[in-house]
Image: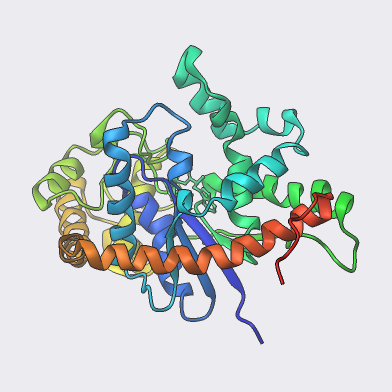
Length: 340
Ligand code: TYM
């Protein structure tokens, strides 16, 4: 039987942080053996807010290099760049024409980002979730491993596939598109900011101290953790709504040290912040050390990375083109005559 298909991606905007790793990429690594996996660097998404053209290609390559450094194996997974497979933009247009505007206007991320952009909100920012739906639907993905913040976008992708494409242009026996399921792990799905335990760790937070980037040097990691927000209570614990910082930092310690929540709860139950913070800093530095080492090797081998992305592009295009054609046919487009 064919292995279930998985697709996911990260935007190449700014540096990837602990949230991206623990909420998404780390889970991808576990899936590559059991699933047919496609991981793209979603560079078309990165231009939905103002961007620096001098930086885009470099950030795209470094994001791909980080996928590999985190353990994505290009022999097992298909790693590619979204803009290099034109079917993403083409399917997005077809989906645009059947997606109601008010479905997009109620997207939480759009509302949050639009506030930050003031008068400068692009059509692309509003349309972003439709492009994301195209990314997923093109690969007939069964599952989409993401962090909690992407849940609403996945529901939208499901609604577009089911209510706007399959029910209008397909039949129950022959659906045009596969309806994907979200895959959101319980742990790591919502890593919070170091400066505010009630806000998500995010690439767009103007305060650098709010996040730990995967490529931060050890001294910087230690400094950020030292300055992380705490509370006056002694001992760390999970699940106390009055203590979001304790919950977040203890959760990070569990994930990064590979221990269970029960283990770290008992280890840190009596520990003051003064002892806990150096422990968390050391654990974080050690967890990121192998990734950083692999990253510098991979980025030094420019042609090796180019080859991975070229092979990924070819494999991804072959799948994406077929799905695009299926949708075009279902929607009634004239197909070019095939030469015989
Ligand atoms: P992006 O680039 O913002 O984030 C990439 C992945 O990291 C997860 N994530 C988090 N997980 C836990 N805690 C956090 N603080 C945290 N911050 C980010 C995200 O949930 C995501 O899984 N729209 C997507 C990119 C995308 C995509 C796709 C994903 C485009 N097309 C198709 C899956 C499938 C985004 O902006 O992710």
